[in-house]
Image (cartoon, rainbow, N blue to C red; front, top):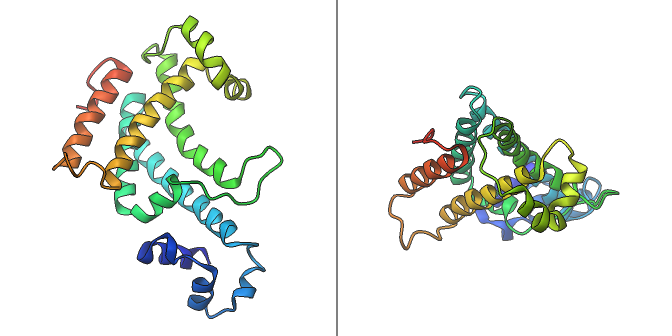
Length: 218
């Protein structure tokens, strides 16, 4: 069912994914699908989990090919993240557009929330390693404690092995990286950028330089 939903998504966009269309493709009645998923949202949420796992495998495979330098590992994952998105634009839109939630757990999270977090955690781990090596630019401790504890304190309290400045540095970098890739995938830079790959590599080089204090990715 998820394979059929993905195929419909790729060929027709989100509007093409419906229980009626899936049942027709599978030669089943729509009511029969409810034996497996209680709603279309639940099915789409399950598909999102698979897609995030696929993306996580791709980015982590790229990371593992470049040795143990965390800056180079972040760059490798960023390139893999972008390439996967360019090759799977409809899936990318489903995963990283407005959330579609499946069943909610006791902590208020969903399975797709955890899957999405797993992709980010691979990047976050490299930021933590940069921090341990003294190579990660972060705000001064006083500023971090004063301004960031109210908004990030709960996450840090639940993940005691991650320092507050590391979480801030990661989220700042993630929004920059994701924003650049998403704008390219959704065509929002076409008005100005004629060579997106060159733009990406230039920005990635600057991004990594600012993280590690050198030009690893250039």
